[in-house]
Length: 186
Length: 80
Image (cartoon, each protein chain N blue to C red):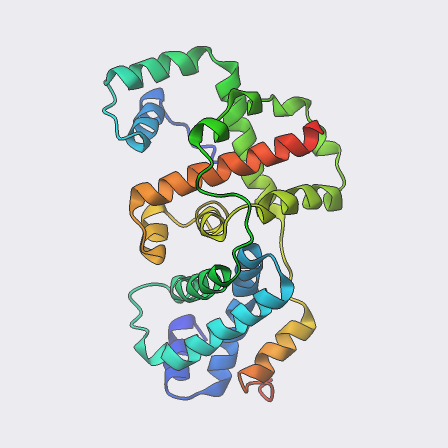
C-alpha cells in the first residue's frame, strides 16, 4: 500500500495501517532523536512522544508536506523542549566567530590519520565533538547536512529565519571540524 | 560529493549570497582573488566536507527491544 493510502486508512481507524506507518518511520525518528539528544533513553522517550503526537494529530495532517517532514517538526519540538530542561552544553553562543574560524584550525586534514582509525575510535572522536554542541545547533546540522533538507525547509521546520539557519549551520560545521582537528592534534 | 560541475561564477554567487553581498562588490572580488591562491581555504573546505561525511556514516540502529516498547506504548503490539 502506498503512503497516501496508508495515511487515509490510518485516519479512518485502520490500526494495521497505523502500525505500518510507525514501522516505516521509527528508525528515522529514533536516529534523529539520538543524534540530537545523545542519550538512548531520551531518544526512546522522544520517539514514543513523537508517534503518540502523530497518532493524536493525524486527522489534522493535510498532506501539503511529506509525512516525514511533519514528523521531523514534531520530533524537533520534543527534542528541543527536552534539551531546554537540562542546560549542560559547553558550546555556547558567546563563542565568537574569531575563535571559531581561527587560522590555527586550518590544518591540512590529509596529514591527519583519519582514514587509519578504527570505526569505533572515530565514532568516539565524533561523539566527543557532537556532545559539546548545543542541541539548537545539532538540529540544524542534522536537518541540513545529514537529512539534506534545504535551508528554506529547515527554517520553516524550526521557525527560524533563513540567515539564522545559515549562521547556525556554518558555526556548527566549523565547531565540529575544529573539535575533530583538536582531537587528532592531541 | 555532488559531481555536477559548477562555474566559478556560481560558486562566487553562492558564497556572496551567504554573505549578503553583490557578486561584483569589493568584498566578493577580494574573496575570489583570495580563493584562487589560498591552499588553507581549500583545505578548510575539504575538512568541512569530510566532517559531514563522517557524521553521515554514524548510524544509530533502533534496538529490537526499543521497537517492542514503542509498539506496546502505542497499543499496537498485537498488530503483525
